[in-house]
Length: 507
Image 1 (cartoon, one colour):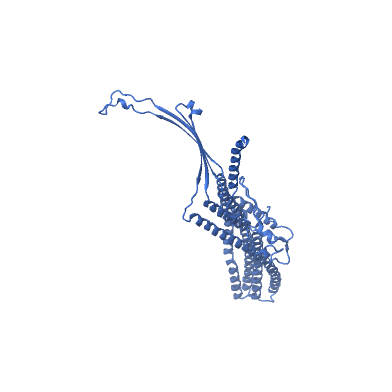
Image 2 (cartoon, one colour; image 1 turned 120 degrees about the horizontal axis):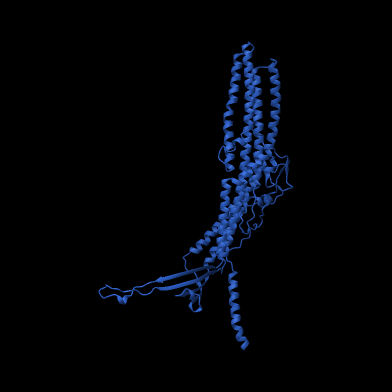
């Protein structure tokens, strides 16, 4: 019996500890089970619906740094400079650091709060007994000063009985991962924007070069015709027609030159420089990047897993789901443990003696029983936000599938269109050469020569524009596949595990 009596306090202590542990392990609210399936047949298909039959390789994953396939060192340098110095990208990096800092603060809320205080008080009071009844005093002196020294430590710890704090940490973690994906999406868009602007610049420079060469050739023809008119072998109308043709061609030079300058300034700003900073480096006309012989395209499942905008939408869905449990926890009691120990003495040397110590320990239970629907309204609002996040995720997946299929369709049809333009150009060049020989021999009219020259000029311009459009479609295709980003690390130690069904691509 004596042994049983001695065991009772121990058993009670264990029971209380076990009950507290079970309560602490309770986490209210819906657990996140992953994003819903969207267009499962299209998402799990072996290829995209609009993948062209030829010119695409689907057996190997597409490289993240897709621009290296264009074999243009200047483009590589510009994209690297943009990824290092672009203001929009640095702003996105700052937003990520801020979200990680907020996550760190949220995690700290799960731990106890400790504080310390100390004070030294010196007080002198007047000697009231020396004061006369009339309120006057002569030669009185005050009491000696009073001294008091205090030091104390206090702590408070809100026990997360129903998981409200854990849900808040879960929501903040998912939100931080969403901002991380936003940064990746900014990288994807930035790399594509630099490539588009660079291709546009080279396209404009090439067409300006063709227009200038054509204008020079037409000027030579005009001078020759004026000599023939002086000799009586050409009519005045021929000179006027050639003059019109020369001025018409020259009229295209000014807008093309303006477009070149605009593209130069756009590239400068994208790389974090002032307008005009790249003129010396890029003003000289250069060739268009080289289109790779084969284009690597992943399957829809891989594309959906590496698109950062989908990753961001999925992580925001996880965050909104956790916020439901965070608000549901407000229905239940909150337990806070308070503790305080302090010392006070008139002599600092005796401050920390046991006799001068006071301590306090108290559990504090609070329960907001009647809030007139505030908590319920917060829960319903969180559920609505979760439903909105589901809809946005579904929209992101469908938009990504459409984006990839449209990019494949445009690229395939533009490649066929370019092949047709090249055939037209080859025919126009041969026709112009033959007509030019016949004109010199005097067997054809100037009108026929001008027509063939206009056709040749237009065909050259169309081919260059077609090549540029094909390259731009290639860039858009890589962007639609979610390529062109790498993991950003600011040294934080946040845990960012992939969401169910989604994995990060290696760059």
